[in-house]
Length: 194
Image 1 (tube, rainbow, N blue to C red):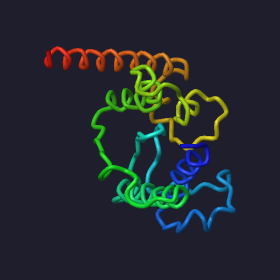
Image 2: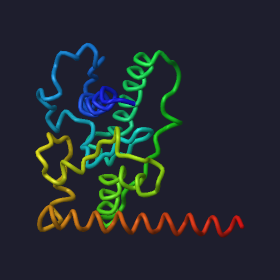
Image 3: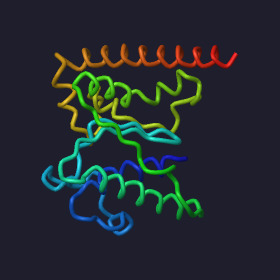
Image 4: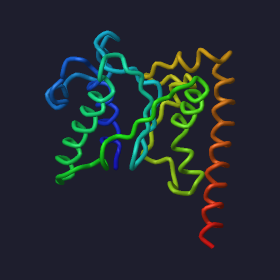
């Protein structure tokens, strides 16, 4: 809903990604986000790409320890829900049901999903569901090397391209292809309903 909530979600992605429980972010609130990041052997997952939208998020994770993805998602959703509910004087669930996970079983799929996640805020703008990019954050700026302090392990994606420009071209073409497929499905559904 606002910049503070976006920052808190982002901070949660970083600080809850440790094998040993971190406790409350409030208790650790005096430590800056730019403080020391956990060593990879202490992390639950590698974050490959993410997009935080006003009403949902997408994230590509590589599990580093047994049960790492489930534990990370439990901490992330639980911790953020507690913060959001306290801040907004509400109670109850914030996220609908259990997180949805899809196993990425091929390199080609990984590359296209990375483009979809990195550019997900644009998918919603182009579809007309989100009028602005307001309150969205994605790893796209990290991938483009725009001086953003990163949390992503980008080499698994960028290492497959000659340079950042080649990945950018691939991702934008993949986005356009996704947008066209979504429109075709929408048109087909409308045809079936007539």
